Length: 306
Image (spheres, rainbow, N blue to C red):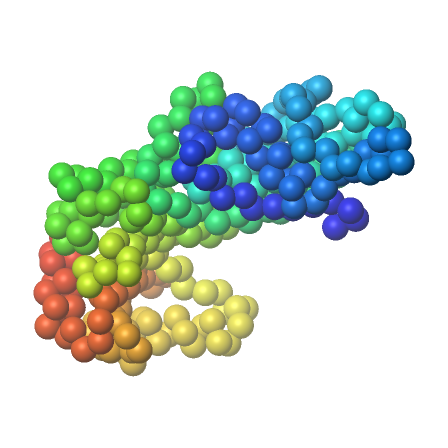
């Protein structure tokens, strides 16, 4: 967009969430590797390997209650600056940056980039360890995004609970084989709702966990709160909701095999305006009996009667 770069940078295991946030070179050096800046030295053009420490640092709170890190570097050998807006996330960081003349930074980008932050829709995904680091950051280092302000997350062989927005789940960790915080992956999904003050707000409406991937003990678990689409929504969207609401086809709560894995979709808590959707998956085809046990254990824990 008009010469601006956008990058989603996955955090290496060697860098902590704290270091990522407090040390801008940890991610801006990656930006330089992807899109080198060159400086003429005599008759040669050499790549700049680091911006060094920023000459200006600040923060920006967007309309959705997410704090962005604002950084600027003045390039000493030219009348240009680098301006970056960075949004820390569980798995890494999303960065918007631009390299331009100082006058265009000061009179244009300083207004454009804060405006653009409201329209960024990043994924909230990562390993359990990454999530634990992200959610445990002190408020004075990096405050939680508004949609994560009141969440409660515990994941270990002794405790498994997820309280996110419209989704509240507490299970026996053995049900989903929750025992590997380094590799097991967790993600959330969110919807946009009207808000009197901000116009829009984000609300978590789904959580998902994948454990022991690429093993015979792989378990997938997702809970989603689904709102009834408006009458003005696309027909395909309304038909899909109707299929879920009537529990037809694959949404009848019975296990089925597809490809190399076994699945089960359960609809519950049906009201006039919404429903809840449970999605389960096991490694291996035709594991019908195993899936029935998995399904029943999860539904019992959720307090759902079939």
